[in-house]
Image (cartoon, rainbow, N blue to C red; front, side):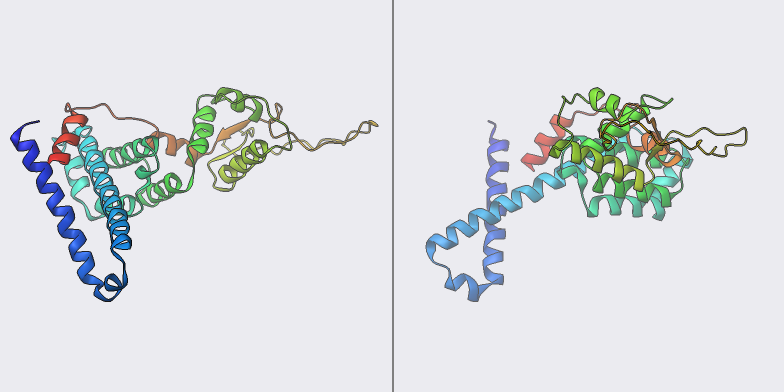
Length: 267
C-alpha cells in the first residue's frame, strides 16, 4: 500500500470519527445517558450506516459516469437535453429513491433508463417518470417475466414463461404459485402486459368469441397459475419500457469502473 493510500485511509477514518463526534454533540442529553458500552455500540452502528451512505454515493457516481459514457455529447440536441430542467428533474426523481441499492440489476435498469431518456424522445417525460416508478416498485422477478414476454412477440403462456425463467414444477396451492399469480396481476393492472388480442386493420381490438361452459361431469378446477392456453403480450407501454430500461446503449467512451471505485474509496 502506498503512502498516499495510507494517508487517504487515515483521512477517511478521521472524517468518520469527526462525524461521529458531531452526531454526539447534536444529542448531548441523550449521549450523556448512554453508558460507555452503549456509546460504543451506537458509534459502531452509525459508522456502518455512514459507510452504507458512502457506498450509495459511489454507486450514483458510477451510474452518472456510465450514462455520460454512452451519450454522444457532440450532438447539440443531446447536450441541451441533459442540461434541461426536465431531464435534471428525472435524475433527481431517480436518485431521491435510489433503486440501485437493491441490486446491480436494478442499477443497470436505472442507467439504461436515464441514458435512453437523454438520447431519444420516443416517450414523453411523463411516461419516463412512470417507468422510474416501475423500477422502484417491481421486483427482479417482475422484470424477468417482462423480458420473457418481450422475447416472444407473438405471445407466450404463463406456463412457458415459468419454464423460460428457470423455475421448477410447484403445486398450485404453493406460495410460489401465489406469487406468480400476483406478478401477473401486478403487471396486468399496471398496463405492462395483457392477454393476447387480435386486432383489425385499424388497430382496434377484436372481441373474443364467447366460450360455452363444459357440460362434462368432471370436477371443475381454477385456471392454473401455469396455464398453457392463454397467450400474454406486452402493451404499448410495456414495449416502450423495454426500449428504455432493458435496452443498453453502446459505450462511446471507455470507462474503468474498478479504477473509479478505488479512487472514490481513497478520496
